Length: 199
Image (cartoon, rainbow, N blue to C red; front, side, top):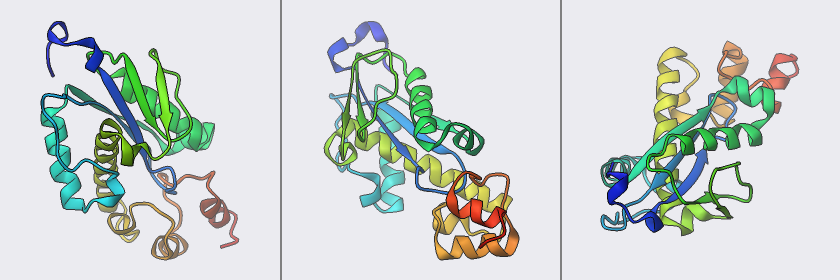
């Protein structure tokens, strides 16, 4: 992190993105990043287009080179209470609030904006088009994959490390065999069906 007094405020542009909206277990995770234009990072793109190793390597570079970065989250219980869109926006606000220095502008992946204390722009496919958002997507993806590895250790037999929380056949079969964990999103249709005994 660089001293705020030494920075040109015009470069304090944050990128924000989320990972995990389509999953049925665990938190939605967001990241906010202000890149340093004097330390460009080659290879930034949508995290889904990168191998796991490349994402991890880039995450190390982003954390080392960015002016600042932060990761935010909203838990499964919050998602169930306020819905996935609102929980995602809250998680973005949490990531943004941890940035220091404070950005003067934010670029957000998608078509909806969280309430932020600075002007912001929603950009569809921003994770593919805007370096700051690409960096945020990579940090969020790496953080959520680590979360799934932790859940895999807590709940063996659900294969969280393999499917990363998405409703794959493997995941749904494990749910039918072992039941729903406290980390599953009870408001999501596949979990609702299992809880109601219709799966």
